[in-house]
Image 1 (cartoon, rainbow, N blue to C red):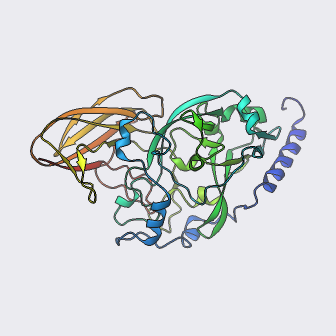
Image 2 (image 1 turned 180 degrees about the vertical axis):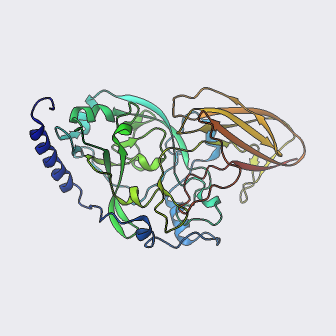
Image 3 (image 1 turned 90 degrees about the vertical axis):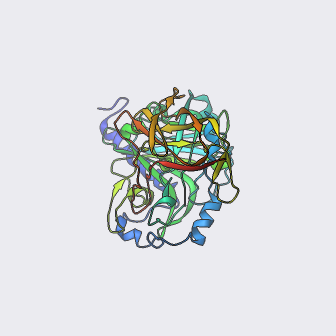
Length: 394
């Protein structure tokens, strides 16, 4: 028996909520086709050729974080990575509402003014695109051609998702929570609004936030204004931007971004396994100064402080090793700003004249370490192999 009424009444209300949620999504997903079926509609498979015009176009629309921004604990919005699947919606926050429904005791419709009256939290979170490192894979999967800079750390302020789901009252047979954004487009031949789901247990975590501020200011348009989801520890595809609706469902969500995209596959015929939490990674601020075209580094001989950041969505980072011409040395770790924010590391180095290769490798509390070689998969996801930086000391 549910509080406030009979089980039958609650089920009837839940069915009405599901119907209402269907009506507010004008671009519903098509039938749940398998990954191989819809993968055939995607661009050609992995290639060893040069970057295509389509990849260059994606690379121009989306942008990575300059590696020198690793010096900062918190990434300014303009330096934080951005991945936008479709177009950035033009949303008037005065008329915008968030709808919560589905398998809940009571449907909610909230204005931004109402949301701002609810209790708020601020969570420092490192977000990383699941495709970070894709362009380094051989052969190269065709999509956004990230190198290694698809990352950033921000302070996200908003209402805990669990607080609002508690207000709505999740029914006992619910299994997932579906988040739908205002951004619409076509991918894999499917017209859709960008939508992803989380298991109920993940959605009810205390640190999952519906954010309306980034680093203390209003969300910029490219980061999800007026409201976005932020899921600490998960790759960025889970943190749906331009959020319009939340639907609690009683069966696994079969949308394109869940069942076709963001899956670890070994071939186009493989249904694969879903991408979720961020694999352990570290990055280094390249020392010295760059050549404009090649970005190769040049620095004078003598002492230099190597530094960078390390993070993981599975467990706390416990160690970072720095490789100098193949010799690995332990770096010093500083405390992170939060459980899912990156940790700064440093290592003093006395640079001798000549050519050198630097690298960094993180390990987390689960025992996972970054691989030295590529972690290849068909969609180019979760490639957390070590960064290598060539430097000339002269």
